[in-house]
Length: 353
Image (cartoon, rainbow, N blue to C red; front, top):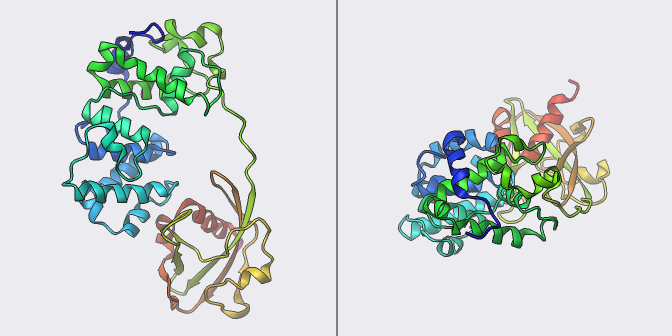
């Protein structure tokens, strides 16, 4: 093994004693569970993903059930997890695997050929489900390796170097003998010991081999390039309910941001704030002068922009949904909509009666 990385055996011994108990662990031979968990964990914490993973499996217990489901059902089950392209890709991938007989490819190249499967997910499934000798590079692994070798180059530029260093672990016979466990040991080390803030170096099985710890710079690594300020966009949405406490919803176009998700009808999102009069031109069912503007605004952050939304509310005796919309019980609407729409429901709930 090259002298650049510490012995895998020490990390595996630590993992055998301290591994986290997670709902997707315990049957590492099931590639469906591994694949689902890895997709869900992208941009979602393990604490938040745990209960959603269990619920998802109850509704779609295997690849064939997921492939047979309508996309709208998959999108609604994903509501609240964010980054909704993941759900569309998940469904497309399930259909591709089911059409090929229901068996996932066993190697990285075959997994990468599936819809929506990137380098990290392919490596994670290959290592954990199929014991392929590859190290998945997620944020935890990047942090661990950057500190081990005191890599000063900032992310994302440093990623190719960090990946090359991580793959070097597979020259170690101990890692190569247990690639799935080794990958998960790296995940656990980064999540519980080599954390982004206040790393617990005294508890680390590799503290003697860590160059950043030796120099006392572990808390500053990995470095990240400065992020550009996100622009602010504005929108206005409409909360139309009836006497039976149903709410009018519409489904967004199948592609693009939040594609296929349910939302409160509203204006496009743009850079300039909406005047009330021009926003009301987008009201889905104009009940005359009964629209009232809810005090305050709802805010939500996307990857590339911030969003500020006004909310107008009105009530009619009974909803007659126009084409392209539907009515659902208000008490259930939040669970079917993305977090950005839930911000509007929270704004309405907080408004004075």
